Length: 459
View 1: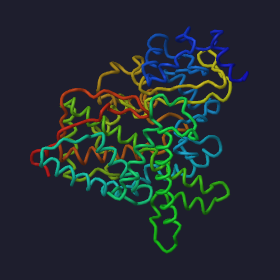
View 2: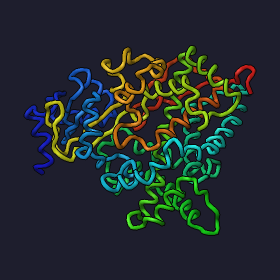
View 3: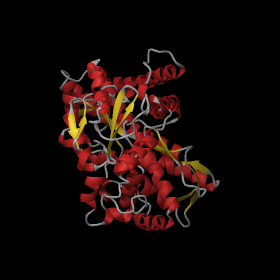
């Protein structure tokens, strides 16, 4: 009990960073109401880059400036862990939610599969997924139809994840799996889940999640059994083969449960964030027609070809547009770290047991880091100092040793999707800017409806 009270006692003595005080339960009501973003923004603008607040019986510390973020994520990362990762109920001990030596082993296993020179293994999978989209969008364009781009990009990136994991692809046969994944991710993302009830409590929400999780486990277990079946040739370049081969070679540390957790993490860990990045890119291209025209001129040089690994670096404007979209609308707009040891930041106590919240959405809008930070300006990422500035002030893939292992693949997929589809189709919204919804990933509230048409003179 004393350990639980230590952060609150330090806060009561004003040893922790400044922030809202006085309310008996602190900011608990705001968090439970799903207003975490509003709380963090208010704390930053009212009290500065390093702030703290009580949330019920917990202490939450918000860290906005890179000089402190780098301490948390890199220099003193052993003091800030993922012990309380909210997606653990879904991902288990997979790479995104693991810690310590287990994380280090998993990282060493997967990192080599995602370095730039290895990305060519994904090219034909990306092309296969896009062929299906081109066909479907062509029919919609002929009917002057309206698409929900948020839904379209979710289906596409889930298809990409299935192909990368097990050389499978999203089809009508996967309808139950798709619904289960959407429900499970929404459960993790649900507002007010900071204090989630145990899954043993049979609420309607819990029962639905348990059912969805069972469907996901069943799919992954069947894929694992198929990979173990020696009579069936398997694709040695898919990610599940990588895990299975490691299990055969290093079975002493990789349990059957961890194989499944890692497979689920690879299936679900990036599809949602990549979908959100693509959705916001389409929205910003519609809102900034000059940017879109320049992008179209660049991708038209491909002559109908999908930009893949041989084209890395050949579409600087398209890549700058993607980076600027990620700066303004980072899919993971906030993420926590558990304080495992007493620490100090900026002269303030950061007590063991606290939760540190890092919000790239706020950091990327810091006026000391980017001029006119609210403005959409891809030119930022073409400047001579762009690589240095981005390393210091753009953390949409994280920072330090736990930088997203799939960041290069995510950029390859995003560039391929935009470069391929922007050659053929033009998407137009209704003129109203989408409103961000601050769930686990940053999405447009209510989706993103856009009318589709074929570009004149293009397939």
